[in-house]
Image (cartoon, rainbow, N blue to C red; front, side, top):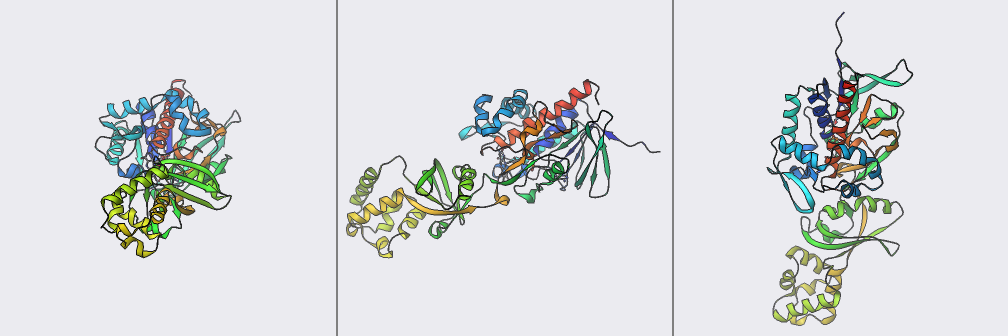
Length: 429
Ligand SMILES: Cc1cc2nc3c(=O)[nH]c(=O)nc-3n(C[C@H](O)[C@H](O)[C@H](O)COP(=O)(O)OP(=O)(O)OC[C@H]3O[C@@H](n4cnc5c(N)ncnc54)[C@H](O)[C@@H]3O)c2cc1C
């Protein structure tokens, strides 16, 4: 009879979390098989950070770093004590990927290419003998009862009809955001079938759709510093400052993406209005004086040619669209004080209704996933199956943009991979 190969570890999903786990376990001598349903690994990784890959966020104090993870932070202290941001920086730099730090502590490869991050990981995987099989979609994970009554997993079946046997398994199939990259929620189905609890995923870190046709027209225009307030029932529920991007559907940029989770929750309760203040650090009377001074210098020019000196051209045009058409063609010395004050008010209070988010296919992450009290965070194993590991976007962990998601992959992947080594040394496998 042919001897069937039994791998020390079978990883389902070749995203950043699965790749990191494979490297960690294989470096310490484990036999590792990684199964990926796409024709290539890391499809999502290659589009991260607009193709530049925001690898992590350089906040070296674990406590401060984990403040970004809301209620999940208490679960994460243990894995981050084993593999922190500092370890990520060392890992990539030691593997010949120079890094650079940009605004808001965001770390990128110096080459500005996400594909270089991917190539670095793939090279280490191959150098350490990870067996990579692409075009292999896992469709079933088989469990058996072991002699001591504990549930354990023993094999996976793929769509092509093959069965692979292992001593340990990892679900690193990602979430459901940008499903074209392969993250179609398969892991959630496997986990549910195995008796785990999944919180329904929803889009997060996602642009917002608005009803403002005027602002849709200035698609591609960004404004470097504004305040946005999200208002429900006349009450300001969220107020944030930062850069904003106007798009053909609504609003984007980190300020918006990082408000989307709270806005989505507000939308469940009813209508949400947004109000944008383009000059948050200038009070209305002061802004009026500024505009008056500008008008004084340009008495004979048309308003439409003067306002762009305060705003950008497209944004100035958009502001003027809120007024009767004649106004923009008026000569400055014909613009009344009331009209000037109304323009100031508009620049301090551009309002629109938020209709929805742009949905899962435009989201950076989805909130939802495997609930955290079913995970043993000391080694990233399932509390129901000691030989199953759960990593990365599979976990129900919310976080903002800025490199926090990938750091979660590096940390959970490393900690899970290290546990395979520990098991080997204890000769449990
Ligand atoms: C547009 C965009 C930009 C982003 N930019 C950043 C950024 O700059 N910085 C940052 O920190 N985060 C960023 N993120 C988030 C980050 O990409 C994810 O958090 C991260 O990719 C999750 O990694 P993962 O390994 O858990 O899952 P994924 O990257 O989703 O990988 C899962 C893999 O599993 C495979 N798979 C799924 N089901 C099966 C199956 N049944 N059988 C076999 N294989 C399967 C999939 O094909 C996929 O390759 C971005 C996300 C998006 C969408």
